[in-house]
Image 1: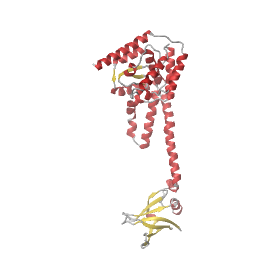
Image 2: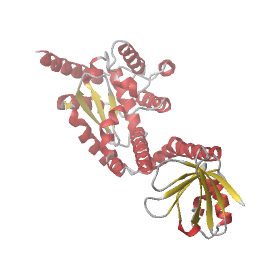
Image 3: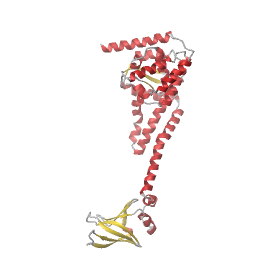
Length: 370
């Protein structure tokens, strides 16, 4: 006869009683006694009236009778197996999940760990690849519209200077960026040293970073670098990766509203979109080629990097380096590329337009000081 140790609760009391459960043909026979053995009682539960409340790996709980119920808790990981074997037609165990109740705690934890690893692996490796694939297949016309929408939402929090923007675009008109996009620069008045690219060709440059420059080659290098992010769709891919990550987590927790608000949230975080070292190297290489083909000295990259490095030692508000990592290898690579460059010359047009931008920003800062 099959017997199992259990804990029994009468319907009118929360006091636990030690019990022995015996599985019989059409009923459960339960011997109940208290700790002192002064109380003993034999109880019978017809199988068809037993209601399973919880059947888990180490403890199973069943109820009997009308409310308030009699309750029994049965210890033992193999109890659900015995129920399935002894009462195959009774609904005491959900057979679809019987493997859970029959599994040991270690086995269950191992399965849970495997599930977590699969979820984490999908988040870290599968989602970025899917996001990059979708970004690569997105038509440029859609990307441009997305960039315009994001720009409208994002630049609401900044002061955009039309004079500064026009001067930047006039300067850029002297450079062939070899881009399939209609590149447009937006000049922003802000004390943060930063610049970033939006999907579709919109690029934002803060006046603080230009004010720190000493010659036009630095501005040309900055522009070429940001155009590279647009041309190679780094911003679009990063945005899609963020959206995929938010959507994935929201899907797991069942928060549909969070999925719907992802685009709006990412519009405000694009200026903080971080690029990996590999993407920065790729953008630098594209920028070197642009400057070289336009006969502009790539010394501009070296001096730009040095300026940013020096500024990082004096201020905590240097957003450009937080989103565009600047390891020593990038500076060394800029030196190596510049040493090999032979075909460059001084441009009077770029020099003149750069000095005009500097004077424009100086007048603006003097006006604000007054």
